[in-house]
Amino acid sequence: MDKLEKALQKAREDRERVLSAAPPPLEVAPELEPAPQPVRTMTRPLSPTELERHRVVVRSGKGENIDLFRMLRTKVIQMMESANLRTLAITSPQYGDGKTTIAINLAMSLALDVKQTVLLVDMDMRKPSVHEFLGIEPELGLSDYLLRNVPLSDCLVKPNVDRLVVLPVAGSLQDSSELLGTPKMARLAAELKTRYPDRIVIYDMPPLLTQDDTLAFLPQVDGVLLVVRDGVSPISQVRACAESLAGRNFLGTILNDSRFSA
Image 1 (cartoon, rainbow, N blue to C red):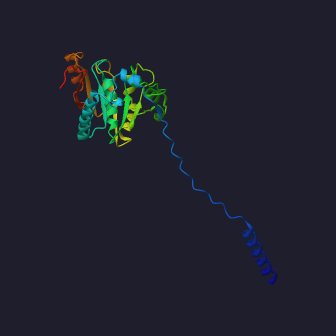
Image 2: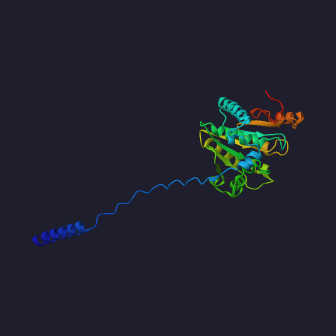
Image 3: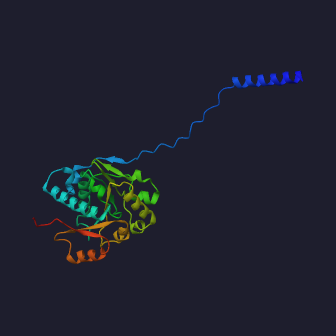
């Protein structure tokens, strides 16, 4: 028994020496969540020449028309806040009525108000012109997101206007009404509306009487403004647009190029 006890004692001592000489166990670092990827919004300077040519006046900071857009901005904000609206479509009866000029000037004027940010979306996919009015050349745009699954952040453009981001269309697309009515476009519209609580989304839509794109997309917007051109838009077209917009939260009509002064 003495020999057995001595053998067991020696085994215990040998085991303790081995354990004490062993390196400490490695600590496994907790798995880290992947770092958020930066938003790759492309920054583009605006062209003063193109802005002036297309009568984008808000960026210049001078001129009597700026006060008109400030008044329009105030009225739009009041209407949207009272009805809890976040998205606004701007359309017209025909091309040439000035809808894009109004949409850009209104978006810039809204962006000057520090209470909100603004996203200006070119939804005229057959004849996109927002980028031309701003004097920028987008490499990607809305159609690339919808058709080629390009990340939305790669399609956005940041002009040198505080609190303003633009989602342009690069190129043109003839079968656009079918695309604007897809579930993917509906999901995008919902995301653009809800992603940032201080964001107002302005959609530059195609003319209401030239194609069905606007009617296909209107269920996704909160309100609509109609731009008509003084001395150009026939009253019959204005009435036809008003009938088409019935029940669509039609906020009102903007008389562009008015020959009358207050």
